[in-house]
Image (cartoon, rainbow, N blue to C red; front, side, top):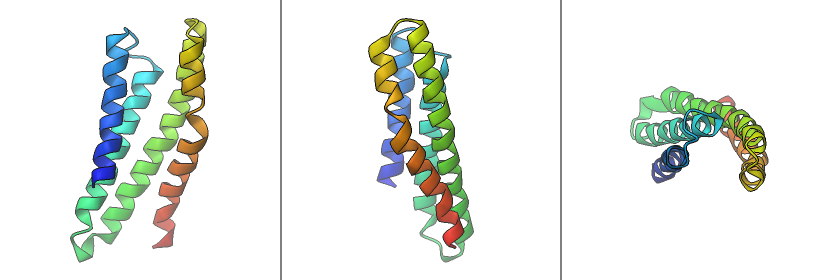
Length: 116
């Protein structure tokens, strides 16, 4: 549950930062929203583990988290392109490095459902 809360909080921080630098409403804030949603899904899955009958719900929540992370990768790629247009090369480079590990994580979490 703590991992889900931390992931959700990282999405919120990203959204808050985009607001502070007047980038709110772009792909970067959308990626933050996807992170927040993924974290909420992971936390919900953890909370649902208390119930023996919650297996399908847990799997669905994890699948939703994987989908959010995968979609967030697309938003981050779009955010990198937007940053390059705005001549924020450092931001574009940092955002661009986000792709690989998050896509792999999203695909892995989504695939978890097929185990059951």
